Image 1 (cartoon, rainbow, N blue to C red):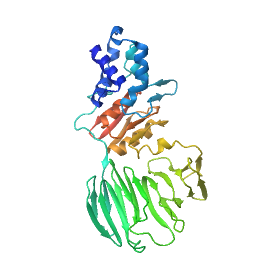
Image 2 (image 1 turned 90 degrees about the vertical axis):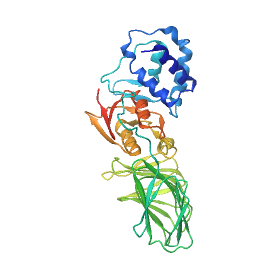
Image 3 (image 1 turned 60 degrees about the horizontal axis):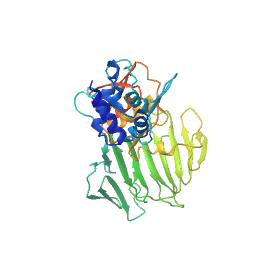
Image 4 (image 1 turned 120 degrees about the vertical axis):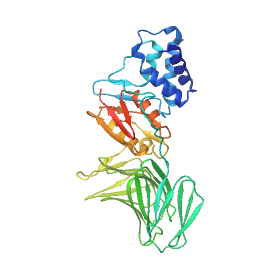
Length: 375
């Protein structure tokens, strides 16, 4: 291995000048450190200063918002930044287990790109309109005019009538989209989700139905509460900002309030949330109240990041599967890891897996299947 090359890459990362390709190469070269018998520490300069720079900046350069990405195992907790420090301190790092870890050989065949603005709008008459980031079109649905532009669907309603015309906005795995409802409510729809809503609101409530995940900024209307139905769970609001995650593969439906007030109804339970709180709803349990929810983590997807803070392997892999339209398979038991930090959703899958591999998790990719390997 070219030690000068690896040391140079480490320095570029520490200085914040590394490209995504250089970070990928760095991870690949770092995985081979264990094959070297020794390191020439004279190449590394001021070890303490370089270590400090790496600790503060390496993961920011790699697209991680907080300055760390670490895995916490059952018996030992290891900061992922230590992987960089192994280089600057001359400690020999040995690879653990299978050689099929991160690197350019990780992905065979076509590169798997991140998700993008794409969805399908199904009108009341059954017509399907394929949407992407392009736009500039308009159409009529009942008393509403639908404008399609800049990755967003905007409804403007000239009359309170016409709520019998229900539309459905559906995002595929690897898609996301924004929607402005006839009342002015803004909705961000995450991947593999759908929202059913009327082309115009009337009556004594504004009701929509969600599958998957969405972030809502509800337009205020005290005379007409806004209601979100997710299976047998109901969220009632007047005007507020909240996130609702209701993927069927997740263990609970989570309602998280950022502003305002919402009432959550589940079976015989009712909870009134305050800002900063989260309600966890499971079919076989009462509502679980989280009084101090991690707001940044919960809406990270809306802001263009994967949130890893405190999440286990299975949760993180489900996030990747939805965004990259892939299948997850475990070659053995699910690795008992937890992660911290956030990674940009704009990265190609290879770059994301290389970053995760630095935390001790290993992968093999076959077509659109991610195989998680057990050491």
